[in-house]
Length: 617
Image 1 (cartoon, rainbow, N blue to C red):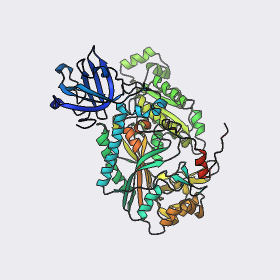
Image 2: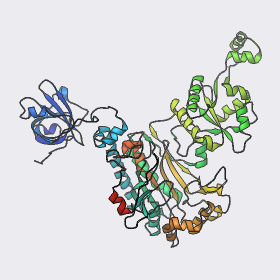
Image 3: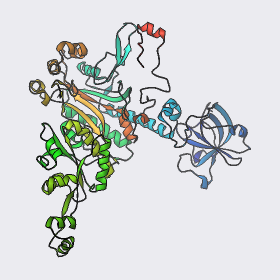
Image 4: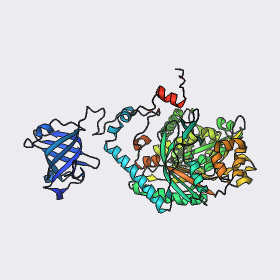
């Protein structure tokens, strides 16, 4: 028999009754039923119940066992009594009567429990990650991650892509985040960098004639952490293709990702139509360039209904150039109580509140005031059929702008009795993100967001440039290496109207994919950087390897990268990316388990020609 096991803790069933077996694993739980011991033995694959009575030759040793001791047992497989069968586990029809025991590894008192649903501080979980990972939910998340990556690889190979590896130690290259620098021992005073992405290398592969590349690539960025982003490193499904258009990239990656979500989505609906929405429209309709389309709410511009109106705040605001008023429709939100809750939300976002209108059935009181008659007379006229109660707009804002304007707003937004609308105004860039968060909150509060669905959208037509509001200086707003739509001709006109062949894929409010058709023409690249104030010499210094290569017959090419961690986070229905990363950093980019970052030794610093300058406390 094998030194440690003849089967795993998930394999035994009724067909094994009478067999002598050997199992190894961890003591998941011990139950003492008055001289009869039950031990749940757990390994990576499952749980088997072990049983012992005082007749067992190792009974005394079994009584010493504690949770999470690692043990090996030998025993005989027995069928459970019909009334004791556990249908929740594959081994629930049997139990093993133990005859021999070997303790492979004792456990000290646990800093966190593996069994059960107790909550522990994240710092504790990360410091003892190897124990945290023993929990069933974490085991399932890591298995899911492995299976997703395997599926991605298989699907890419089926599309005639080959996987190639790019360097981990390279030159520093500004790509939107801070580099992690690596000092060179052989070249004192100089530094390598960990790659933020394989971007330049995969483009150079296209120049080298490799038509289709992909890689499950590690990327390193010194970033501030968020719930959906690691502060140090992450993995992405990275791909590049030659002789392709933007649509070719979409048509390539959609079946790969759609297939992964269908395979691992747990039965949730996966949209098969992925609309293409311009960056401008996404900001207007959703207040975000990564919209959650499960929420049906679409914001609209309603400036004309407030221009010259009795609502002085919005009317005066619209006298300034570049300002507008936007409405967030709230179907079924037509109550003062709900409007007050949303005002409280706005105050939590740092706003004084949000203007609102809600529509309700017209009351006899309002008609009585309007006609100068009593409520009793109104009720009599309604009963006689001479008056029909319609709908009316309510709220302070409605009183200020009057019934004609509120009705025009209702018709534009397609709302009815029982609905509401909220309003924000100013320069769009100043309030779009708040409006987007309000849209999300409204959709969630009113139950409008379909939580049992994965909804995708391509965000396209990103502007390449933006102007500083104070200085007017032109700089890059998005990826400077995207091919401008219209090529060189577009760069000769108004820079603020230049759009790039750049695209993101949004799903359920997260950015999953980012990519572009690349600018492979040196003359167009130099011109694009010149507009943003970067001379030819600076471009060649920063990106010399790529620029030089483009002078030797570079093909048109493009690609994208999909965030593996974020995809698994969505599939696992987790809110924090650290739940799907094996050994993540904490919020301060620290590895509490391995004590990183750590202080270098004096010898290490001398060898590298470095000196640490103490920071002021």
